[in-house]
Image (tube, rainbow, N blue to C red; front, top):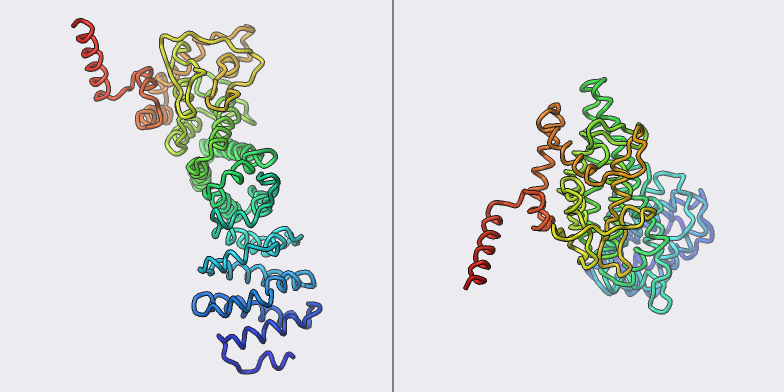
Length: 471
């Protein structure tokens, strides 16, 4: 058999495809003796399937007739060498990536062979094997659409109960290797942007929603690490500049990923990310550090310069109306202007000077979504408590107005009396707010930064209204 494999034949021919498949089907165990033949056969079959997909439909018809996918799974089961697993994953990645014919792609996904390969118990202690496996998963995700994604999920009463491709991929979302993290994120975006409602509900429900919680926590740790590098640079000088730049790149990459996830238009995920960003990062770590003479927790706190940078990046990159308006309100408005409205829309956060503050239960969290899921209600007491807590302050009742004024006054104080970094950071913060299109016009007016053109328009409308009333 081995001699006939190496005989001279036309490389790209249906006869060659038949021969390789027949020889592969005769293999009963894969070991050190025959592994080279199996590897070469898998590699050649991948080339022939790709060639046939672009030149002759008979190749893929033979592939289906002989159920070659089933043979691939069988070879994996009887293999005793890692190198064959590596080649099989590479073969599948090449085939899936290069298939152009929709009928061929549909067939590849229409049986359980793909899901079996996805859920197979590979030994991921081998880093090369893990890399090939993630590439295989990413190749599959690149072919997802509303037709093909339904072939990879299991449903019960029209609800998705299992999606191996997604579930297995997010296991490696926080792997130490950045290339693997990047590939997993690309895969998840491919899933989100398909727009399948059942799949969207699946990824936004427990326990899979934990992925987003862990993602924000991972991002928070990166922010804390950046702050430590910034502090270290004051002592170590320019030696840490490369590390800081690398950390900044990672943080901005994370924020662009959040932005891409939001752009998929899945409301539940958008609200979840907003809630988590506020609860995990902004309220407990970022905003408190902007107060003057703040005592920073060395393990979890973030310094003023880093906080200003993070707020600028978040507002500039992550385009979420609720997030932008809440941050702006807490940062610069008096407490009377920061009022949650039960009638607020999902993408709006209204600010009204004439509205009175609604008392909320102090034992609730800093913010929550209303039961109808259509608005984000900010619970003022808890937020103020976290921002106004001083170790030396014995008062049990926080002064809400003083808290918010303190944030605004601190920002202005950095501009007038701060060091170069604080001045630059504060001015950048104000400039970013001016350029943030997600801010409601009423919020810009409350902040006193409504553009002159819009101010004139507002005055004109007021004058017109007054004339109408007089008439």
